[in-house]
Structures are given as structure tokens and as C-alpha cells.
Length: 389
Ligand SMILES: Cc1ncc(COP(=O)(O)O)c(C=O)c1O
Image (cartoon, rainbow, N blue to C red; front, side):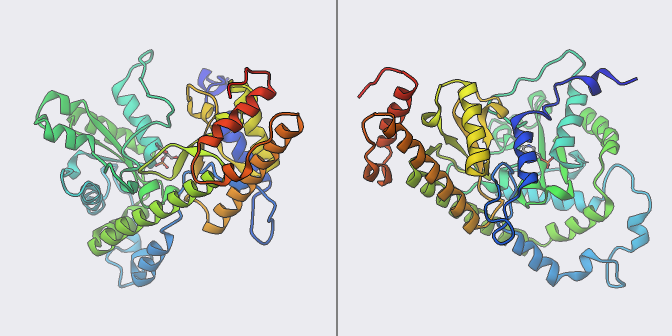
């Protein structure tokens, strides 16, 4: 006998988000071993500052090993830990969260509940806040939202934590504050999704207490907590990491924006995160979600890029794609954009061949974007829409 949950078809595993991953796994790009393989741009992973963590580990070898010099012994870590988490880690995490928010607000470690990533934190929180039949309102396009990208803000406007809003409105000791629960994780800010380090921060003692008990379904291993308590307690490291990581994300984002523009594609202006929201409405054969899937399949199978269609994030308008830029090298990103540019060129040629007015290529290569509108008109005409130039 299986449960209704196990047999229902609503866990999204068959969405294009996961299908793209499966396709990538079958034929992953490698600069030498598989240069024509698929480039993974559907993974919001931050690999830009790995070297900083690696260099810290190199300088602090005792933190990741069980030597006589380590401040924790193998036994201490291997034996039973209760679900409250290591105090040293909770203190360090609370301080790190404050540091990201420029110490404008502080986090009380007693209000933190540790979980195996933000995913587990979201689930635990939902069990604490809702009963069967209740619903959550989420703005779309979405991936369950939280303060998980707080440390990736690379341009203005800067990040404003919901805790800061409460503080500025003098609501910190009010009932409103009790209804605000923050989900956080080190998956994006430190680029450690594999370590499964997340947390719920709540001002409601009942939520903290219930979530702490429930957290035993998805605890962070003691070894991970121990290692991270060492890393996050090194204030010189965290300060340098946060600054340098933001600088690298900004640079990478600018590179993506520039190369997209060169290919004639726009993206929304953004100030944070590991991906851009890219406007490919003009490449759709029809302004429908079927049209979006048709284009997505071409981009996956013909262009060799796995990007996420907006529909997989419940975007209300077809033609938007999530394109990740921090999970690869600069060279790979340049190649991906070269492939995309050739694809756009081939679509322009097709439109030319079908007897429409030829596209002004020099305009498409220029920095400004209005010509994109012209290209859009060509494609629309192809599917029989009214010509408007
Ligand atoms: C908004 C958001 N929340 C949660 C997650 C998952 O985070 P974690 O690895 O901490 O479970 C992601 C990662 O893709 C995300 O983008």
C-alpha cells in the first residue's frame, strides 16, 4: 500500500526544470572530454569563490580533520548530538547572518533552528504554521522565497532584511514580529549546497520549540556544524569572502548581460543572485506556454544549453527563462553565449529565407536593443501575426 502523497503526480519531478537536468546528465559538457556536450545553466550554484574556501581549509587543516590539534575529538563529534545543534555553530551562524546585514540587526542564536538546508527549513516551517487544507500565497515567478540570497547582493539597491524592516518600524517586540519567520541557508552565500546547512529564525518561541523538535528529521551532521563553526568564526575570512564574492558575482553578471546583449537578447536588470531572468519572448513562434516549451526544447537539444523555462517557476507570461551564470568558468559561459548567438543568427536567417525583410545585422550587433523589436516582428510575421513596422 502506498500513500496518496507517494502516488500523486504533483511533486514536479517531471517538470522541465528536472527534465533539463536529466538531459544534462546524459551528455554533460567538458572542455576537453566532451566539448559539444550540454552546458548546465539551470543550476543556481555558486562556484565563483571556491578558491577562497579551499585556501582557508589549506591554512586551517585541523578544522577538517581529527588530529590531536583539533579542538573537537572524533568521539565528541561521532557520538549523539541533540537536535539543538552545536552552540558554537549557532553563535557563528547568527553572527554571520548579522554581518551580511551589515550588523544593522542582530540574530539571537536561541531563536535559530538548524535544518538540512533551506528546503528542509521550508518544510518544517510549513508544518509549524499550517494545517491540512491551509494554503500559502507565493508571488510568481518563484522558487520558495527566503533570505537565502542575502549575501549575494552585488549592486544597489542593497539587501534589506525583513528584520530590519521590523526594527525600523519599531515592531521588534510586537505580535507582528512573532509572525515573521526567516529561512536561511549557506547553499548560495557560501556556495555549499552539498553540506546541507539551513536554518529557521523565528521570534515565536512556540515555532522555535516545535521546529527544533521536528528538525531531527533533517539534522546537519555534527562534523559539518563543527567545520562551519570554525570557518564562520574567522571574521577576517568572512569579511573578505563576502566582499570578494560580491565583486566576482557582479563581474560575472555583467559578463552575461554583455554577451546576451551582443546576441540580441535582453535580461531584466538585477542586483543579486546567481542567475538572470532572460527575455526570449521574441524568439517564440507563438506567445504561449506551448511556444515556450518548443523554444526550450530547441535550446536544450539543438543549442546544448540547459536553462529553465519560466513556466517551471510558474511565471505568468511565456518567453522568460532563468539562466544561471555562477556555476561554470568564464570560458564556459562565453561558449554558451556563442552557441546562443549562433542560434539567434540561424533563426534570423530562417526568417530571411521565408521572404521577410532582411534583418539589419549590424544593428543587431550594436549595443542598444531596439532592433530586437524588429527581429521580434519578423518572427511574429512568420507565424502570421500583423506586421507593425
Ligand atoms: C530561493 C531558494 N530557496 C531554496 C533553495 C534550496 O536551498 P537549500 O540547498 O539550502 O535547500 C534554492 C536553491 O536552488 C533557492 O533558490
